Amino acid sequence: MSESEETEKECDSANTDESTRCLSQDGECNQGETANVAQDLLAEIESLKDKVLRAEAEMQNVRRRADKDVENAHKFGLERLVQHILPVVDSLEKALEAKTKQDDPVIEGVELTFKLLQDLMSKESIQVIDPLGEPFDPNLHEAMSIVENRELESNSVFAVVQKGYTLNERLVRPAMVMVTKAPNEE
Image (tube, rainbow, N blue to C red; front, side):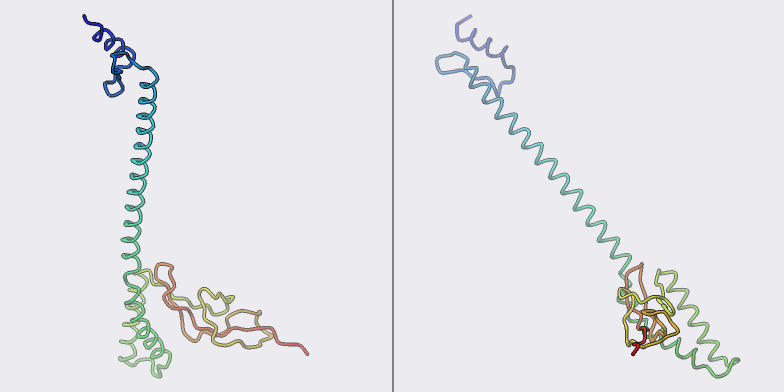
C-alpha cells in the first residue's frame, strides 16, 4: 500500500463522510480544515431545516386563511341579498300594522307571506334587532333623536323607528331608535 493510500485511509477513519474528507496537496489530512468544513455543513443543514419549517408554517397559514375566506364567503355571501330584502320585510310589517279588517283574505295572504319570510330569515341566521326598552348600544343601534323622559332609565331605547338585522352575528343594518336622557333640572 502506498503512503498516500494510508493517509487517505486514516482520513476516512477520522471522518467517513466523503464530502468532509480532505487531503492536502502533499497528501496529509488537515484536521482543522475538516472541522471547519463539518461546522459549515452543519450550519447549512440547520439553516435549511429552518427554511423548511418556515415554508411549512407559511403553507399552513395560507391554508387556514383560504379556509377562513371560504367559510366567510359561505356565511356572509347572503349579506347583499339581505340588504335588498329588508325594505320588503319593512313594507310587509307596515302593511300588517295598518290592517283594518281581521277576516280580509288579502291580509291573511300578507300575514302568511310575512311568516314564510320570517321563517326563511331565521333559517339563514338572519336575526332581528328590536331593542325596545333595552340600553342603547352604539354597535347595534343608530340614535335618531334623544328625548328627555323622567319615567324611563336614562340612555335606554324608548321607540324603534326601524328594526335592525344581523347575519350570522354580523350587523347588516343597525336599528334606528329614539333614546331617553334624564331631564335637566333647573
